[in-house]
Length: 117
Image (cartoon, rainbow, N blue to C red; front, side, top):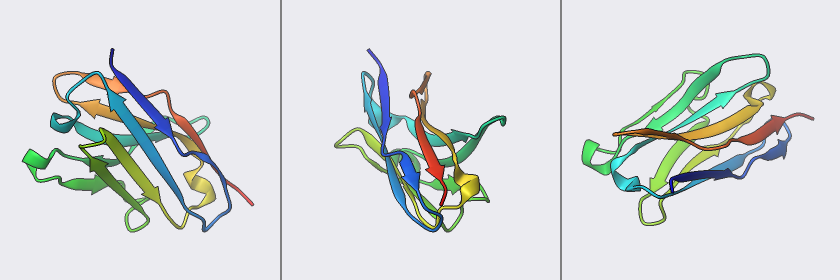
């Protein structure tokens, strides 16, 4: 059974940091590209960051809005992908989802991030 379980969301003040985790099971994690998306209230889902497989060089890409503030990483031994979020802004408030893609596409259930004073 495929599962992607996000954790680490919560309420944080502007300028603060959070680290999101996405634990995967039920498929060969290491051969899947992993990404983080987010969806703010009343808006569509947008791509935040992507990390390729080690075989593809582990290349990362980011949305312009988070470049220099967010870092995506993966630990294939733990079947987990992370999103380190620094210098958070109120506009980062959203539900954050992880996604795995290669032969199929899998989504997690999301974790809420709220940036507010």
